[in-house]
Length: 311
Picture 1: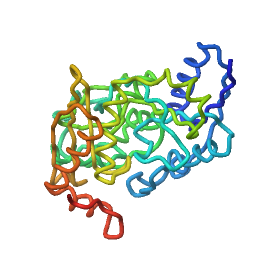
Picture 2: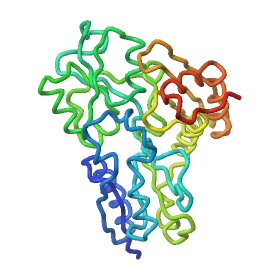
Picture 3: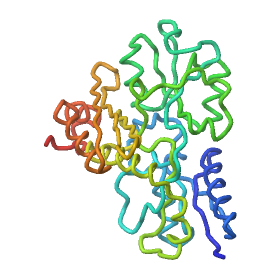
Picture 4: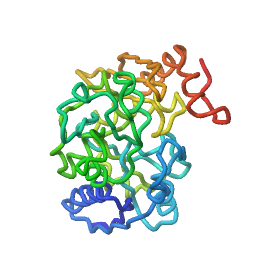
């Protein structure tokens, strides 16, 4: 059997994910080593992610370790992985997705409707902020950084009346005690790829590919490829106000997508279905661009950023 070295970030959630993949590989008789790698996103902890704006902030250093041969594969939260990989790398597997939705957490309040005017809500995501403010412009939305434990602890200690997080990470870590409401995609459209793990290897590494491709889940791959195609069409990374959620039903993909201004003043939603993941993602992306997403994204990125061209 093979000896495989896995590269991972060092957060509690990233390590859970890496150990989960390690267990699946060990069950097939492989010997596994884990190398913890600190990424740019891990080093910048005092600035809202949306203001950092670096694509690949959670993946670049791990890819460097892959390229240098220090690790054989990398385990990523798929939503952190840029839609276009740098040359020399391959996304060999996308794991079976767990619950992709966002959740509302609070110690005192049972749902978003119950929050009083001016309640302090924590999130580090422009996507979540935009959709929340569209529904409740009276809320005081504040940046919330740190790992899952840190964010939940800040809620528990009363720094926030509520926070919005991904269901997947909380479920994996068993931190579900303050979940009060699962937010449907028509209200809070998730991030592209949320809930799935991406397994990255060096392009052309045939041996490693053979050993890990069993981790790929066909339906999860189709859905997330569709979401990532939409994100790519819109020129977005993981820290922009774009949501995408696709699911397979009876061989047909259904895609919900959203582009919104961070203050919630303008929200564009689009829903379409199709059979080809990339074609559907690009078609919905084009529809949003034609409806005004170009201007929203230009304003978010700023005048110097490369904005997508309207078709």
